[in-house]
Length: 200
Ligand SMILES: [Zn+2]
Image (cartoon, rainbow, N blue to C red; front, side, top):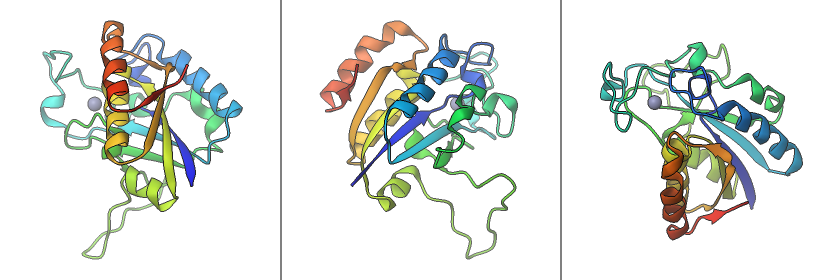
């Protein structure tokens, strides 16, 4: 069996200076690179929030809980993975995009992004690219570790979905950044109750 690291939403719009900048987001990008270099994961994947028309997820008057300023618009600079992750380009096995037409906090809602320049299939025989869980299972991954942004939103949801999908799941809180740091203790309790291993 194999293990995988899931790097959640380390995108410009979630880093300082971005539309929904989370304090420390760019620093954790660098720490994640060091972590990958020090560990020996069988697979390393990243997720991207990737919005085209996500309905009430976007708002001109956001409540910062269910609705948010416009962010991570598909193809925009804000939606790109932060350049601090560039050293991982060679080891990144796949990028999974979520949220095209709806809010999608969990990376497990994401599907494999096609390589730059590849054309999606069309017509009745076209099949969508795999969902994250299916892609991992095809590679006999049974254990995942989750890091990224934001601890209290997309990392939280990705971790809980990993457990639901049957993966042995761990998280490294030091390699995550929170929208509201005061939310973190509650999120950690929720993860522990779900059987998640908390590392470091
Ligand atoms: Zn979003």
